[in-house]
Structure formats: structure tokens, C-alpha cells
Length: 175
Image 1 (cartoon, one colour):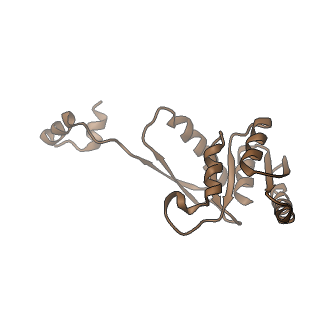
Image 2 (cartoon, helix red, strand yellow; image 1 turned 120 degrees about the horizontal axis):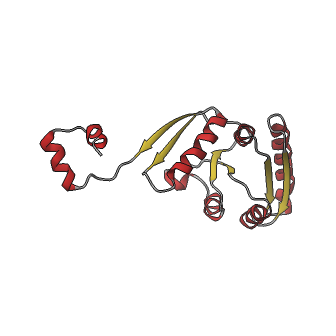
Image 3 (cartoon, rainbow, N blue to C red; image 1 turned 180 degrees about the vertical axis):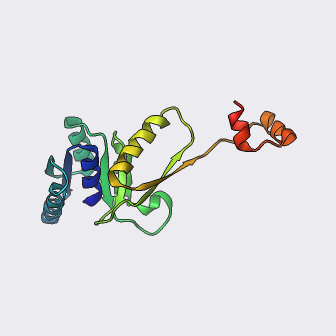
């Protein structure tokens, strides 16, 4: 619960811990985990609450966000062997896709975010995303690497670069 608590404290935002059990058998385990998370959150966050429910996680989370909009959802997930989206369970992936606000998936447990990779391709709304990511990373004290991927240079400019032996920074500065 360190990562969500640290983000909420750094942003000065309240924290809601949502515990959803699918069955009554899971209920005691979820309640215990939510109580532990709440105790840890209260050390850092002034306004923290626990919301408990039984049912479908996606429906419950979506309903909660309708009633109480949030700027960010942080999910703890157990990483699985593999690459890409297959490293988190399909249920977590469905939740990420179903929710409206940005979703940050972090490894479960008491880990801290030490570093982050922020990727951009220069899309229209990237400035808002970059500002939001910067706030989150500043709140966690993480270092960040920005990776900006440029599209292929059109052929009409590529010849000019070869003829004048410009390096890419000179070309970009030339407007």
C-alpha cells in the first residue's frame, strides 16, 4: 500500500481503498487486506477510507467511480512470467481497459517506485499526460526517463540531411 499512499499524500488527495470479494470465502481475506492497507495509508494520508463490497470487481469499481470520480486508479497486481500485457492477469487487464480515469498498475506488496519510463510519440494530448505523470512521479520521488519516439523522416527531407550532412539536432532546430 506504499505506492498509492505515497501518491495520494504527494498530490494532497484523499485515498479510497476498494476491497471487492467475489465470494463469501474471499471476504475474510479481502477484509484483512483492506484493514492492513488502511492502517498503512493512515500513516501518510490525512483522508483515507475503505470501501468494501461483494460482487464483480469491474462493475463495483465503475459504479464507485461514477459516484466519486477519481483522477487516478492504482492497482496492485501479481506479475506473471512473460512479456507485455501477459504479465498481469486477464482480470486486471480488463479492469484497466474498463475504467475511465488513468490506471497505474504496480506490483503488489510493499515495493516503492524507484524509476519510471515515460514514452511519448508527440500526440496531441501528451502535454497533459506528461504533467500528470510528472506529478505522480514527483510524489513518489522516482527518477524518470523520457523516451520520445519520432516518426520516420519523410524522404523529401532525408536527402537534404545527407547533402548538407546535418545531424538530427541541427535539422530539428532549423524549423
